[in-house]
Length: 265
Image (tube, rainbow, N blue to C red):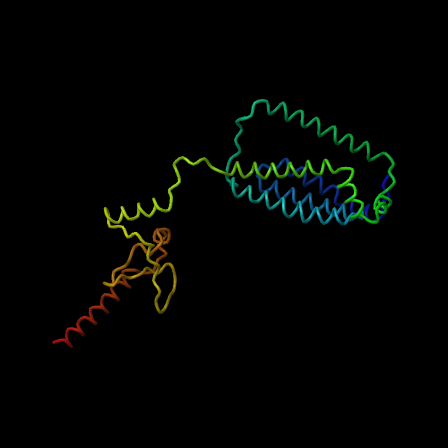
């Protein structure tokens, strides 16, 4: 058996059940967010087990690569799919239950084989680390030596999964994409037929006491420009008192006009 110190035994009996609990949560939770958090919890405890067994490179890779990078991919998938989407129970792939059963049997066989190899005496982790001068060197020799085919196969599998995720994230376009030239032509046609301004919408008002998107802009005649206020804010009633500002501006303009007419007379 692999010789473990007292500290490693304590870490094993603490983190081992936590890893199993996180794995069960990954499978049993119905919400994808809870499953992802359970998987991260299991991976962190696996990193603690690697650190206790004097495998610092595996512990760092478990935290940085799996708990960090791959969990971020899970979050991106959840953002694309949506956490409120209900899982479809319709089988779109024929015979997927049969293949799933075969996969379960294969996993059970791997677990039995792993337990069988665990009870067979081995030379120990310390001797394996000292084989090539350290944990990192020994692990590199195994990855790029004895198990280089499996390593490259895993890389190809990850690349295929990334390409498949990008393909699934793309939506089929129902209508042809409008080019920039066609979009400009549509704006000019709307201006010629309906009088819609072809340029950008006017920005919100900037006044002495406020600078907010909830402050509507005022036209030269003192009236409020409805295009300068967000429809969402207007529907919520969160915009400033446009009639009061409009009337005050109109009064100021009227006073200026009266004074100008008086000077002219």
